[in-house]
Length: 97
Image (tube, rainbow, N blue to C red; front, side, top):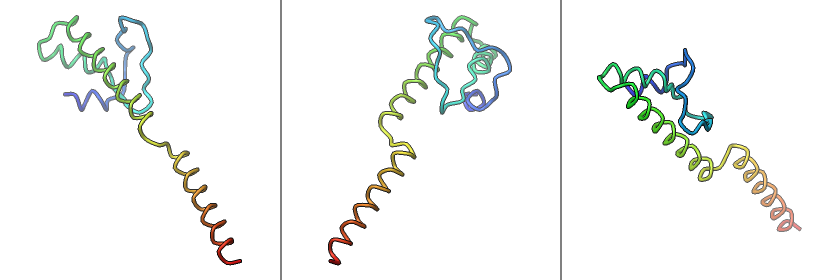
């Protein structure tokens, strides 16, 4: 159920969030409407399904924030690699003199 909601494309407007803050969807494609519908099909009342879907969005946003602060980006890794290569070249040139 959750896997399908995470990967399916949104076909309708997303569920309105109580605090009206947009949730970043940079890495996680989460179809809250599909997830909410699946919860309703499993027997949850609509209001409860919306709250659960909203909370899942909050958790995914928090995980995304932590990941962006914790892990280096491709650009940062490339810069580090270039800096290391330059430093090694400088050291080699100094050693060969």
